[in-house]
Image (tube, rainbow, N blue to C red; front, side, top):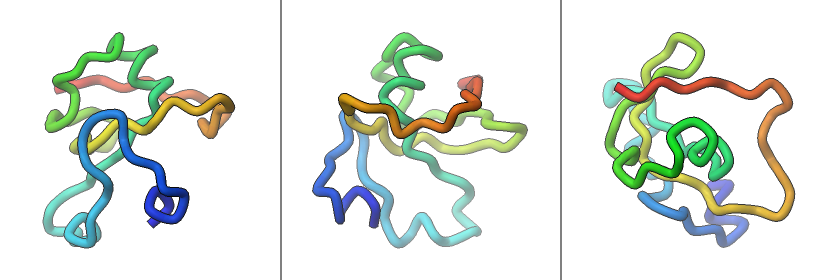
Length: 82
């Protein structure tokens, strides 16, 4: 809903959908543009792959847009694509 309200489209991938709220389908994530660039050098094949964030596995469904200001949390996460 956050992205829809702001009218933001992802750089790659799709926005979160109601089906993503279904806990049976596993965790999904939209990662920030900055994290995508820093951790995987902007790899276009990251969408559709699983990453490990803080010990949990998430399916990457999108990469957010690049913003002139950062919305990332101060303590940056490291991701590991699987």
